[in-house]
Length: 316
Image (cartoon, rainbow, N blue to C red; front, top):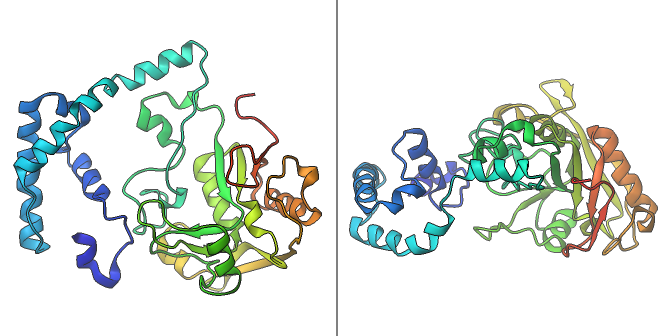
């Protein structure tokens, strides 16, 4: 309802209530998973939340109120499924670590959608940089010994916000990236905005995540493009900068500076080694490493797990 009320100024959220849920968390009125295991406590907290949110919905956003009983009953139906998964997660992970287990934490959403370090206000409501793997699970940050940064071989964005290297999605290379890369949002189904690879933007992501090595995905989507461009920096207010600015206002004024490289006509789909890639594809990978200053430890050449070139294994 809030996103609809913004009209043309909308942020581009998924409309699933994630933002309001995080607002409740920060305001210390949030309903937590453990509350579902105590019906009386859950009912009390649900009423308090609905009293607050229904006032906003009906008086400010002119939307329908949320019914208490239906919400309460629907939530309790899920309790038998949720109950076995409620645990002291921090202690379980710490015990596994002490026992020598390999732990893998997977983040969601792009780094520059982080509420603190992203293109504010065009961000999500949570921290999605690597450091939140520790904060979000309750493990110590010294347990994160290797951080793998995942980046496509081109740049995409869902929703509103600055995008210096953006291409028109309905024609040329932009259309190719969108169609061949199947670039649609996983939650909303909206077409993603596509553009040239932005090394200056990736520098910012590497910096705020402390990336150890990178995985370059969707290299095969670039097959058949005659000339490739890499954004190496920007012109901003008469100056040249080589890293993505902090804040949406400055980022929105950036004019990209491009470096051109030859594309390749051969197929990279399913390649299992760097040697099997076209010469131009290997040069493209090497140039990204040089510009960003972090090694590429994996290259994905197709949608299947096996279609991956592993140069350095995170657990070895």
